[in-house]
Amino acid sequence: MKSLIYGYGITGKSFERYLLKRNIDYDIYDENISNYSSNKDFSKYSKIYCSPGIPREKFKLLKETHDVLTDLDIFFHEDNSIKIGITGTNRKSTTCFHLSQLISQKDSVNLIGNIGKPMLDKINNGKKYSIIELSSYQLDKMSNNHLDYGVLLNIAPDHLDYHKSFEDYQYAKEKILSAKKTSFESDPYNLFEWITEKKSKKIELKNLPYRFEFITKNIVNDSKSTNSDSLLYAIKEANSFFQEDNYSLIVCGNPAKELFAKITIEGPQEIIVFGHHRKDIKRCLTHKKILEFVNLNESLLYLKDRQNIVFSPGYPSGKDYINFEERGAHFNFLIKEVLGD
Image 1 (spheres, rainbow, N blue to C red):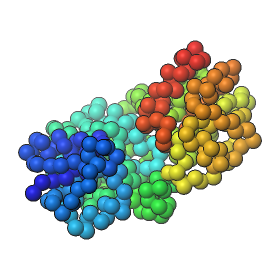
Image 2 (cartoon, rainbow, N blue to C red; image 1 turned 30 degrees about the horizontal axis):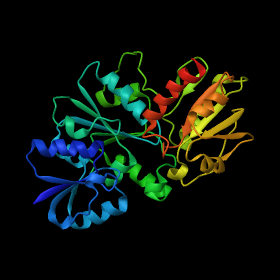
Image 3 (cartoon, rainbow, N blue to C red; image 1 turned 180 degrees about the horizontal axis):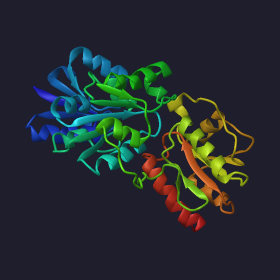
Image 4 (tube, rainbow, N blue to C red; image 1 turned 90 degrees about the vertical axis):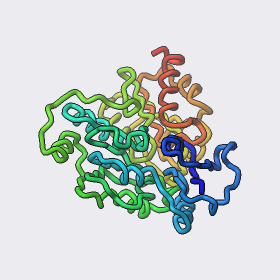
């Protein structure tokens, strides 16, 4: 019998490469891609390879009748490296990235998972360690935890459109705590010592783009901000940095992920909201001055004479952009085009 790849994004395409290497016959189903959206008779497939973003209700139903595998299940079963899983609502990518830099000084390391490198492409590639950034979707679908080290950084409301409640989201995140060894540490140097039982020398750690990144001395690109917790963190940082100097905050994206939660914002002199979801955002925010614009270009034209600008969207991209990377790159481009910086 054939196998079925369910979901044809980054993970789905890594499933395809995995199956091709093993000469396993397969079909592809993805209801969001026209070429692969025709209805399938799931009973015809021996195994179903599921991507993380498949709705949890559908995933649970499939598990009742089929042998369903995720890329994490396969990686746990086949890979021999020391596995370090890191999750949290915020700063998990940065923590993974920083820890990988410390480990790579002495040993070989994979940086994989939700950070963008598919696990299945790195199975038994000779690296001693694998640092796996794990999302709540991946943990929710994880059958068994075979991590050598599990790190839970923080938990704040997020992805409630998928999990339906904060309690279910928290439960998914806390599944990482069934690893062989667990920690709530966020400092990469302390994590390095915990894992290797050695101290790391201090180095200048590189940062990922679009994480409260100063692209000029007065303009911050924080496009990675995709939830209210990261938005409030950015405002705290901006309030501290700009102090008595006023700044303008730009917000965009789809508030549905947090079920349109209300947020009170203090600090910026004004809030600019733009895009398809601007009216929904405006209903979520409490501030003395909120202005709406159709797009980012119009927003920056309005801000042309302002000195201090913080772009911290606070929500996932929704209908405005494909992802936070595209949105961050567009912001940088328009800063040069519109403001000449």
